[in-house]
Image 1 (cartoon, rainbow, N blue to C red):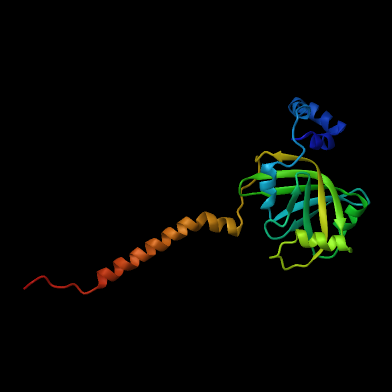
Image 2: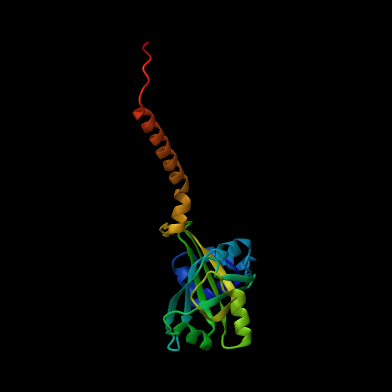
Length: 213
C-alpha cells in the first residue's frame, strides 16, 4: 500500500475504527513506510490483461455510483506509471458516470481476477475527452481494433493511490477462455485415448489368419 492510497482512504474516522478494533498498529506502520504510489511491473502486467473492471463515481447528491466497464482483454491501457486510459464504449446511454465525472473527477476502480483470487483497488482522477480532434486522436490510440462497439469518448485515469487486497473470501471462478486453457491437456489426452481405442477396436474386429496348414 502506498502513502497516496492510505492518505485518501484512512480518514480520521477510519483510523478511529481501526483503533477500536485493534488493527491501527498494522496500518500505521504501512503509512510510515515508503510504499509505492506509482504502478510497477506487477500492477502493469495485471491491468494489461483485464477484460473489465468496476468504476465508482460520486453523484451530485453525494451518492456513490458503481458501473462496470468491459471490453476485449487489454482494452484498458497503462499509459505510464501514473496513468491509465481506455476508449469508453457506447452502452445504455444513461451517461450517469460521464456526468458524475465531469462534475467531480474522483474515481475508484476495482479490478478482479477470480481465477487467481487477486484484486487491485485504484483511486484516481478521471479526465474525459470527447467531441474534439484531440479526443478523436486519443480514442484511436486507445481503442482495441477487435472491438466492434463504437467508442464515444476517451477517459484517462490519473492514479493517486492503489492497494492490493488479500485473497481471503474471494471465490475462485474461471472464464470460458481460462477453462479452455486449463482443460486443453485433458482434451488432448482424451483425443489420444479415443484414437488408440479406435485402433484397438479395428484390430480386434479384423479377420484373423489361420496358422494351421
